[in-house]
Amino acid sequence: MERERRVAAGTTADPTLRRALGAIAASTVRLATVDPVTTEIVRMRCAKHHDCGT
Amino acid sequence: MAIGDDERRTISHMGALGTMPTEAVLDRVLGTGAAGHRDVHADMTAAHAAAWAATSPRLLELCRVRIATMLGCTAEASARAADSGVPAELLEAIAAWPTDPRFDAADRACLAFTEHYVIDVASVDDATVAAVRDHLGDDGVQSFVSALLVVEQRIRLRLMWDRLFATTGVPGSGEG
Image (cartoon, rainbow over all chains, first blue to last red; front, top):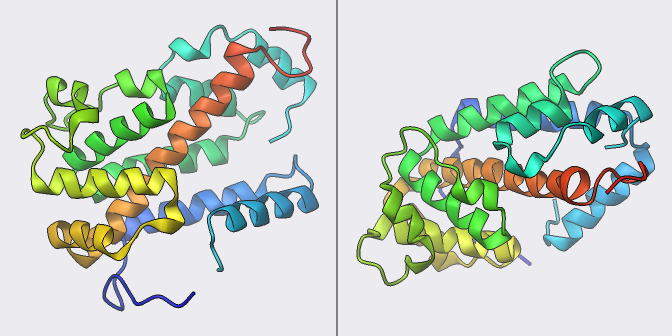
């Protein structure tokens, strides 16, 4: 579903917080104790649950 | 996150996580040494600090306590952030925010957003976002939502660890 922008183009969250969130995502992906297929299935299930098309 | 036998034995002797502050639970479960997941731990800790620096501590504290009460996380609901500036009695009245006059317009906008966010993040409507934007501005909305993600994720993780390691023992360990 197409939606109109809710915040102005070019708007960003606090840069330090944005970098910190990126770091969590990166370090979580680097964890190797869960196999990649299970990890991807869980990620896709979460995206579906939250209606996230990205 | 899979847990090896050594980690399982260590965690099973931690005692009741449910009585510990969340920071202590993070230390115990993720570890701070080479055997644990110290990179994830460090990144989560950094994000938590950044979240509190990026938005109004008052608004984030009100919303943190609201999330904790909605999700039934007693430890987080009773914890208090240092220097948030929110009176204790206001936090104790958090469920009454729609009608309690001690909550101002910015509080209400952010708490309404938070409730929608927790219940169904995909259904947050334009008016709910606009109300927050009216108080925080465009950049402020993005920082607020990002900070909210950090505190919500931390509470959900805490709840899961409480269930796994404290309430029912460690899965597969024969304890609990």
